[in-house]
Length: 268
Image 1 (cartoon, rainbow, N blue to C red):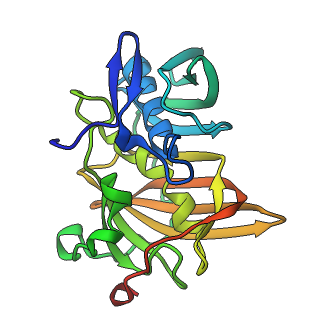
Image 2: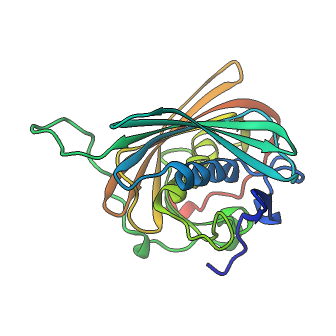
């Protein structure tokens, strides 16, 4: 990838590049890169081709600035069929986020049929037009191809999303890192309304039963609920071959609303 990576190595830690900047505070990092770097370290240190990274939960309890970053991991369980690994994101020596993950061993699918929802009928990415430049990926953090609706629009919302940057300079993105980066988008996609985005997510949980194939991840909003300033949003996740899992977020009401570009009515 020719675009600047989100992070570069600095000894045993990392330094964030300017493109990692978040939308809520110009001096803080975007939630997606926090999730992405935790996924990167978990996979680099503890990944195994015989295991699926089936769950990743990231709690984000402080907005980190651009101070030097360290990631510490801890093995909770290193079993034959299940591995549970925790990780902590430290910015300037201060804990700002933590992750817990499950890696589950691959095996044969049991006999029999289990009901599942029909897969979506979305056109493949190559048949979807690119959006106007100002609607594409927060200044170039990612690429999007909206299918129906848009962030903050009424009605169903579906989109394709693709990563355009490496997580860490000089290290190609893996399928797990791609889908982990997308997980944070469940918050604006599911929780934004016609007045903009008024919720900031405090976590993200990614579930996948297989890793995605190809560079495009499909997101489809399946739920939003909110009471007393606390929201939960959820998206189903796909690749070009079908369903792969889901992403769910919890979020807090934010007094400073994030204004969003208008949804492309031609996609509604």
